[in-house]
Structure formats: structure tokens, C-alpha cells
Length: 301
Image (cartoon, rainbow, N blue to C red; front, top):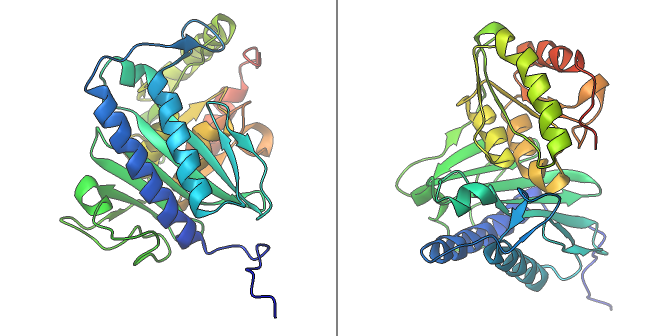
């Protein structure tokens, strides 16, 4: 009898989350250790402001290697060039260092973002921010959690103790279940956003911002899309929007936000994508997307 595993059977989301969390922690440790030395921009991508460091690439190489060792049939899409088709129906979507400019300037708002997609649907996600001492996790249908570093690292092996919406055995502090913001009026909302890298996109985004600012409580620009989505999930900000994001920017964070009860989408009822990502509590979502739709989408370079 053939005892080989049936690779067409998708793994449990909790199993994928356990692996993603372990790998994100290892990549975060590599980045923290590397940040103790001198870090310089190694190259630019879409514009002189769109930088990559050697540690971006080292982190992605580590993540790709660890995932390949654990699940060799899976696919992987990474910001720094990894794009491997798989045969298992599982694809990992990886931003090895979200917030590279923050990292370069020794600002703490950066993270490793890893999402697991099964048959085209993201089912597990982790956003690990070691310099902030925070880790956000979610599995589809199981809710979203925010862990302190102590709690997130109190695990013994991939998948151990994992259940829906959890990330393992609690350590010094129990995780916090995320439920988003209670704000219902856009005029009282603190809204996070981000800017692209090209001059054309930035110019258009500033024009949009001039329409948004008078209609909300205030704006925050923190420089890491995955963490902005998690901040909205935690209610640290009330809502978030940004144009120009790629799958690795939002895959894990969008799952965290949606599992916290936020609506996550784009314009005109579309899925979140490069055209627009909005994450907001249901009472704010339509008002915010309508406000954004008032401005021509001139930043679709």
C-alpha cells in the first residue's frame, strides 16, 4: 500500500500558523541581531526612496529555507524576489522586513509578515514586530490576537498547543483578543495611511490626503502597512487605507484586521489590492471608502 502523504489535503490553518510563527520569530531574531551593526541601503527598486538592505534579503532567504524544509511542496511569494510555484495548494506570502526605512533609521515600527494561503484564500497570518515586543496572529474563522514578546515566544514546537485564533501556550502574559475600534463616526476617527515610493504616486496621495484630513479626527503615517492593519485591528487607530500595496504588504495584516471584526476591502466592492486597501470597523467603512472614491485614481502608476 502506498503510504505517501496526500498533498492535496490542505493542512489545518492552526498548523500553518504555528510554522509561520516559528519562522517569523527566527527571522525577527536575525533582523534584531543584524540591526546592532551598521545597516545601509544596498539598492533601490521602484524609486530612490524604495530601498532594500542586505538584511531584507537575508531574512527572506531564511524564511524561504525554513518553509521549504518544513513543507517542500508549498509555493512561496516574497517581496525580495522569491516566487516559487507549489503543488500542495498552499502558498506562503512573505514580507521579510515590512518597514525597511524605519529599520534603517532605527525606528521600531517594522515587522516580519508571513501569511499562508490555501487554494487562493489566506487562512493564517502572523505579523511579528520584535522591536515593539508585539506579535499579531490570526486564523480564518478563529479571531485575531495580540501577543507580548513573552507570550509569543513561550512555545515549544511548531503547532504545539495551537487552536483556532491562538498562537500557543501563554507565557508571562495572556494574549489579547482584538476587536477593533468602537468609533462609529468618521469625524471622530484616527486614520492611518501610507505613501508609495514614486513621485507620481506620492503627489496623488497627498492630494487625496488633503480631502481626508478635514473629515477625520487626524491622520497617522507610521511606515509599515502590515503593522498599520494590525493597529486598526487592535483599535490603536480607528481605520486604515492605502493605495499601491502588494500582496506581501497586506496578506497577513488584512487577515488579522478582518478576524478582529473589521471590514477589509477596496473600492467599488472589490477585494483589497494595489488599487486600494481599506480596513475599518463596519460603521466607518462605507463613509471612508466613499470619501476616498471622491478623488480621481491618478496614483495608479
